[in-house]
Image (tube, rainbow, N blue to C red; front, top):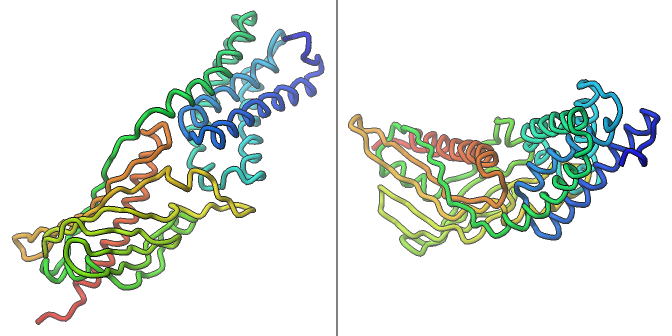
Length: 318
């Protein structure tokens, strides 16, 4: 390997970065568009590989300072991320969400690569081969894993009776424009809710900025519990980009399965309103992306619950 690497530091640096990005790009495109997989391979192993590969290719059989190693590793990640944006593979929001874990894992990759070129340089080709092979192998394996259903619950106390709150749960008028930063970045947010019919079997439409959630009612226990399935849902966001992006992760990678509103009369005459969403996503690592999903769902819940609270508390008292 060392015989094909130029001795000139500048040429070697850009060759190391270019080869790493080329390999990472091919594997990423194959994983996303070939396997339809957003998981450990692109979000964990790929940044790990970019940090290790760029460091090994630059530092093999030559002196390399730790500062040089992490600068090359992060430059590789930065150029790779810019390429995803420029070539309309991903949008700015997805890249920003992935940035914390990508930066951390690239740094870990740099540490691995730095240790290899300084302690066991003869093992460098084997290490690179293993890292490259792990990416498609992991993508194949995790493709067969079934996602787990999880739930998010948000609650609010409303100074109104359950009956008054119920009317505003089933259907509610246009919400005010959002003030939260998260909804100004392209994340979809609710606009209003309408319903066709009453009781079990009625169809509720919760309209978002990207389309409508179609929600057949499965439990109608007025004024205590409204429960529904989700049989259709819109895209979870509109990606910020130079182009009109229709990334695969916008379709069937975040899936809302069912939801409910539970109303409990409190001793003080007020109502505790709890909103629950059950969902799963096909993006891994689950623990990381669940942090983002739970945060966004809580914000959506809060937007709806605060709107219901305002409408219920402003209704004329008999």
